[in-house]
Length: 297
Image 1 (tube, rainbow, N blue to C red):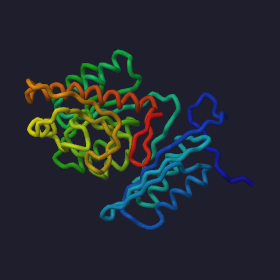
Image 2 (cartoon, rainbow, N blue to C red):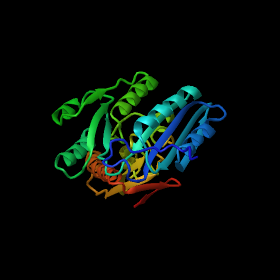
Image 3 (spheres, one colour):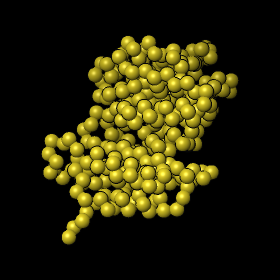
Image 4 (cartoon, helix red, strand yellow):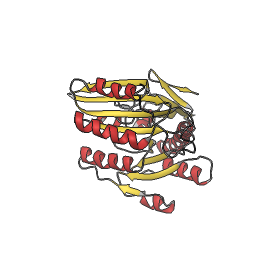
């Protein structure tokens, strides 16, 4: 007797159609024995195949990211069973479903600068990029009028306590079923506890040609050091600050009559272009990450 469960795509036009579906599972919690075995056993018992698996332990905190493929998958069943496994293991388990031809849900994180945000929203409004900008999260309320103008929900999250702020953000990401997080000059450092949950699903724009001039004052450093070529880098976010896989870089020459202000203006323009291009590539499923390096499909 074949006891393997038959998991089907919920809400598909033809549940009998054999199409490959994939999921991401993240597990975070106190390190203990048997976690990996329990998760992999669940995948295999349901006819799944593990495509990628990565785990890490930092100061007793266990984090694991797993990607698995199935011939069919039913969201409600998987969510219910993983919730039960979460309770039994006393670990936080999150699941994200990859669906072919799905319009991806995007969350944009901002602080006070609007140039990257406006570039993305204008592109979507003109129909040049297909996505659902589900929400905008701000560490400051300054850009809320822009969200209102585009009829996008805006959530101001105070960051007095970073752990509490991230907990609120995690709830919103689950509520809106977010596929991609875009840091559009978001001037907060996300903790490993947050980043672990979304490997290769958080894109940041950094005002420097990484790896160089790290930190928020990159243009000032470049100007003071007399750099002749300056630029910016869009990259996936990892728990190593500004060290994630590079997606797109934009550069410009420093002219003899350039001032710090003109360099900043050129930099903002380059940032908008680089971040938008990285987001487009992600939404069109053109990016793959292997051994810390981004490849284009």
